[in-house]
Length: 237
Ligand code: URA
Image (cartoon, rainbow, N blue to C red):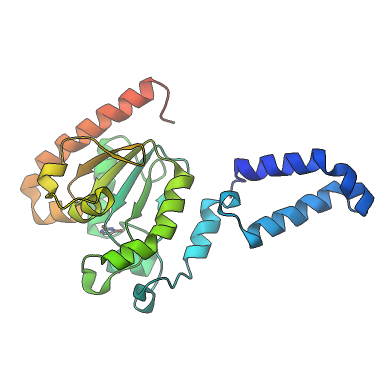
């Protein structure tokens, strides 16, 4: 688990400014830092937490009724400092059992799409609009999306991706707050909180409609061009 910069800064400040006070109070600086760390992890201003801490908090979430039917919260997977984030709809049955997004057949296709971009799960970050499986894989309800925003927003703030790729109609309409069909959201860049957003087909849809794969590869190529442009400007790790 990496220590967040904010915590390091906090520790540095404590060890210089308050060393004297600690000495007067009869504690060593090291002990004081340990106390601070413990307080941070328990008392928890969100800015001091890591992604792992957040995942742990989310794992017991009961903010919506999906908590009654899920097996596991499916938080997210990948590089916590990824420049590219993929966002799908919601966990399905296999994801609910395994606790990881996109592990079923659609996930295998997503892996192949990543491979085509010379990427893999360790280089990007993958999550869903909501973290728990809706019964019978129905679309997430607005109240569930709303409740899950608590985790979604913090996760996005922590990863700080430079680009987002939304997978499928539900993710696209939810994140972009649009009623437009997927076809009209594809092929142009959108913006979410200052982050460039690209929209493509959901891999599960491509499994059902393999003829659309050609269009999906076109989307991926355009995404790759933007990644390469960022790369050559030194922005993508
Ligand atoms: N479909 C999604 O949208 N997300 C998953 O994690 C799995 C399937």
